[in-house]
Length: 193
Image (cartoon, rainbow, N blue to C red; front, side, top):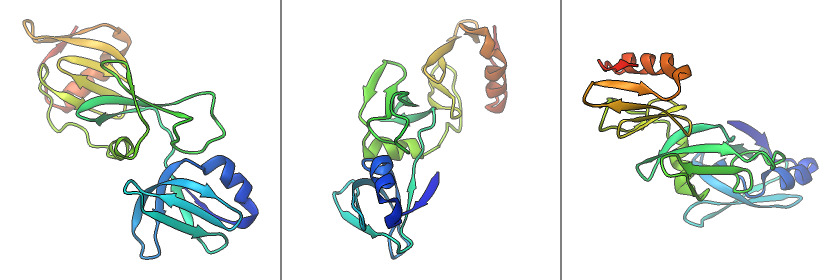
């Protein structure tokens, strides 16, 4: 995450790069709040949290905003694995914004909105503590997700679990070593073929 300070001389840059962007605002009482930048003027920047509470920062007063960069990674949202990706056409925006960010469920290729609840899930980097080959749904790393016996690297299914033979059958053998390493980390005795 990158923290920027709001200065009047940079108000135009802030307006272009950060209006509509999600990030963290630290209040005067040192509370970190997930917000979306709603407006940027010459001397004042406005934020709104998921409960529609408004916050304000004034230029040249040391106000800081920490924007959340768009990183390609998998995360859990609504109990399903999703992928976060930057839309290539909107590079001038810094941080997560509905113009430059796509959240998509990887098992159904369905997009979901860039909203507070999705961003909270994106920020929560919890991975599965245990892996049950044919039953687990979750993320194993920022790149690998499992969904009932299927293994995904980002949004590509790379292996399927064969319960009869207790093995993972690779669809894309280039990821075989990554899967072997993950299974070893989770103490899963299944073979990879």
